[in-house]
Image (cartoon, rainbow over the protein chains, first blue to last red):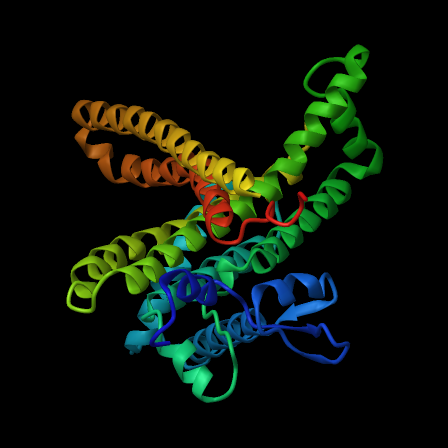
Length: 273
Length: 84
């Protein structure tokens, strides 16, 4: 990347590896941001898919290893780590979820650990993997899937789907629609109720995904800016404190996503009388 | 075209500034209430701290979303090319 201007460096590093129909009609990777936007809806961010699947499989394999070789008398260190995380998630679920559902606790554990692992990719130095992948022939590579709006919206829309599914399952279709139409004011204010309830219902997945995206994108952007604008002897001075602060942000954002999932699904389960 | 870029720069500045204002005031109030509660009942500090971090993440969310959009305006401005 020597010789390119800071603006080019920055916009190169915030561009995903997009696969779709290029300008001349053939299928391939996009070579610039304009080409990627021109590809439109029928395109896929290959780097996001790869890293999110890799971290998800890593999570499954590592946690499965802990549970398969679990022993009460002589627990291994990894088993103790996993038990810490599971206990923390189980405590949060018990605190916040009042319904009865076997899916919530594993879902919360998956959300917390998977999002944490995806966010953790942000602590890898900015140029390591993109430079290595450039040597392998790929023009762009973003390692943090949660800096891609598609990934965070995918997760939050799935949670939204679960909210609606459990809302209808617990309250019945009539009860669900009734709750939308008759809360918070009485039956006389039906249009006002509908507007308020729809807005608050749509705001939940929107804010969930954009919160995670905004935090991670801002963090990654600061790393890229430090890499682009600061001479090499000062990089350490600026990047290390930001990385340390970012460790807090990573964990916090994963925890908040998990807590809000539990709260929203709990709200979907509660039946007013 | 130049005015589009100029106005985008101004917009990005206003977005970040107002977001920082809101976040600063909100987190200041949150922190002060936490310290008050911690002074009253020191034995509750771990639980209060966990709740405070949760609230911090929620309060920071919208300002950070606006920073993300301001960064979009700065580096990948969608308004360029739409006019003229």
